[in-house]
Image (tube, rainbow, N blue to C red; front, side):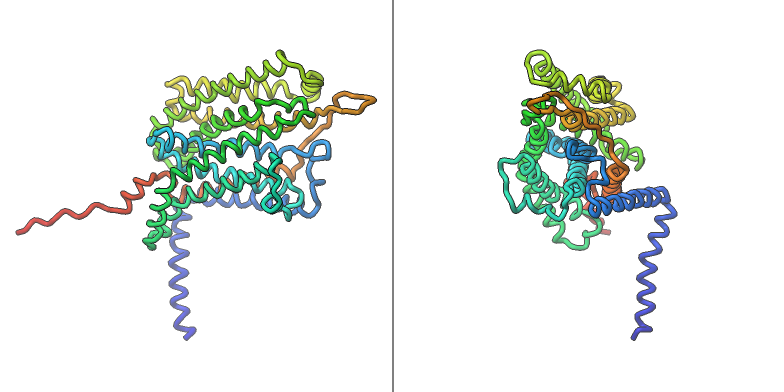
Length: 434
């Protein structure tokens, strides 16, 4: 009996190995890229083990600066994934159905961004074994609790919205029920998208409100912070989505999304940048010229003196984050070229990272001392360790690996209508009677 099984097993193994070997010969760079990402993820695993076994002492964090690189990455990832709900709003509630080919890849980016955020938070918590506490112990007055539930609910919604990409793939095409389930999900998509938009709006605004409500931190305390985080996340997420689509199209050597759609979405992104720029200028004028906050000037001067805060604010946030992408997106000739869209995407991403970094660190490294005998502003330095950088690299490797495999094996750049066309081939023409 065992002798009869051996030829069958060998035949099955050859069916699995032979296509893999042939694919490896045809696409060697693809597998080199996958191996590189897995190696980076492995190094991040070592950093995670060190963090969980030795505690946060392996990081550059302290009691005075408890938030650093990891929280900056969390806030940036949430913003860069905001293109998912922005495109959903365009497609389902503004009637711009022409942007449907962009919605699925935007949902994928949003899913990877939010799950990557969860991975970093598992390290930053210090006690990952207590990750379930916000689910069981409800503290409805806590903004961090609201953010946690927003992440959980939005990831769940993204899973539902991305389920058709898996159900319409060639891996499950042998089961007709998969197509039926996918069709039912598409019927419920407008309702699910509406819930996703509401939760994502709450999520983005709450991340800004976490800083803006703290009266004891003059650099942070700003009622406009929720609006700034929301608007900056929308245009950064849209710009990042455009850049990812262009880079993916270049690598795959085919036009995945029509150029005119990217051109039109870039113009919409430009108008959102205008709104964000107006809000930022008015907010800075209100804080520094038309109002008074105790120790705000002293804290800012200390940041200018001890850190490159002024340079990162002017050249980073405004030049990279606002001016350069605004010039590209408002010039029809510039935004028509793919390389300029990549420049705009890189520029907005850099500006957003600096904005979230400045926001997170400014209120911690320059802290007001409320000692009755010696009130003033104190400075606490912070520098990320290799463990923090390795963890961030691991999250980027996870996102790159998941995106690469999804684009390679799933119909990410197909709309529901295109999938239905593939599912129903044209009927053969009738044969004329002889």
